[in-house]
Amino acid sequence: MASGASTMNKLSPHEERKVIFASSLGTVFEWYDFYLYGSLAAIISKQFFSGVNPTAAFIFALMAFAAGFAVRPFGAIIFGRVGDMVGRKYTFLITILIMGTSTFVVGLLPSYASIGVAAPVILIGLRLLQGLALGGEYGGAATYVAEHAPHGKRGLHTSWIQTTATLGLFLSLLVILGVRTSIGEEAFASWGWRIPFLLSVILLAVSVWIRLSLAESPLFQKMKAEGKTSKAPLTESFARWGNLKIVIVALLGLTAGQAVVWYTGQFYALFFLTQTLKVDGTTAAILIAVSLAIGTPFFIVFGALSDRIGRKPIIMAGCLIAALTYFPLFKALTHYANPALEKALSSAPVTVVADPAECSFQFNPVGTAKFVTSCDIAKSFLASRSVNYKNEAAPAGTVAKVKVGDSLIESFEGRGLPAADLAAKSGAFGKQMGEAITKHGYPAKADPAQTDKVMVVLVLTILVIYVTMVYGPIAAMLVELFPTRIRYTSMSLPYHIGNGWFGGFLPTTAFAMVAATGDIYYGLWYPIVVAVMTFVVGMIFIRETKDTQISG
Image (cartoon, rainbow, N blue to C red; front, side, top):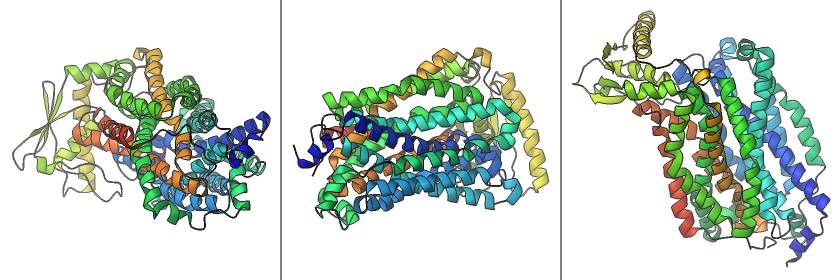
């Protein structure tokens, strides 16, 4: 065994546990900070994007959520370079300070009602800082733990790092639920949502103390003592084809599929429950939290299993099984969470009859467009009420009409109308449409008495187990693909492009796809296509790595 590996094996079991615990706990706190925003997206949309209609506000809130993911690859480049040149521990301290401070400031930020457009601008700026910090965090934590782990146990040891994202989400849901129930729904929506953000300052202090107690990675210390650290990790990682092709294959054949399975199983499931199935936020948070509590140990199970049978078969199986079963599982969520909606969707089909030229793709992340054609007005209402609809072409210039069962409601042309007239007509149309869909059984919200909570938790737990299959072994595999001198930089970029872009944009993309097509399940095609792509690329181009020595 190489000398670097023998250095690692000198660690006692107690020291190994300390490395795993300290690294994982600090990373849990970072994920807690990052995911508070996603867990509170519905309230954030009202607080900081109240200048637009509710449907557009929610899309904007999701875009601000996604902004943090968009810059994660840049954080990976910046902090990966620091980690490979200066050290893993030093980089840990920088990322945790940026993340904790940004989260705390969100809790103090005035709303749109107080300072206008400056509020969402500052909010997005803080999300960008969080994304940069998280971009440098994961690669460091995974590399640090793997470089301490004895050969043959890297899957097991790094799988604890893999639990941190789910545990951070779980912790954020628990804190939100605790504050929500203690002060009441009205107070929470008004000001109480700030408390979980402000509490992050305590987690920041604990995290910094933990990071200061850690020693540098033994492999990095040895490499630095021998003068073998990279002078240009970015050039070595991305400007040399031998390493760059591994980065590309790792992205398309591992992390892209892993990312969409992760975000579908945890975040999109939460959005689907609250926004589409109209389950109240508290109930949805409890159901997700229970499924996470049941499913999280499987990160360790699959991480340990990957040390025995390999990383590749577990990750590939997770991608394929998820792609094949998403449609039936999400239809099962509808059946068990809101059976009244399921019944209405089948018994009272809705059709929008409109001139196709008047129908826009209602996805406007910068907020410059106004959706005021008769078609857009009709579709915007239906999307906001989670009503499936079909599209039927009408002659050019026709004012859109909506067929709801045996009812026919005519929309109106909003272009050129004064604001007061537009608001009045929108209100009248909304009232008509509301009466029509209520008459045909479309519920305004899920009836708690009809929700089969046990079965919902079962479906959600299956989705979480898919997450553990693709995510549990992947840290070890990424570490094993790259040499020590450029490991932090090389593994961080494909991970954060996969999770930051393919995964982070999933909720926004899927939501817009649903609004465009009128099919509440249509957004699932996005993760299915990406997961299948990863399965094909991974099976052909990804090599098994479990027996790789990582001391070089």
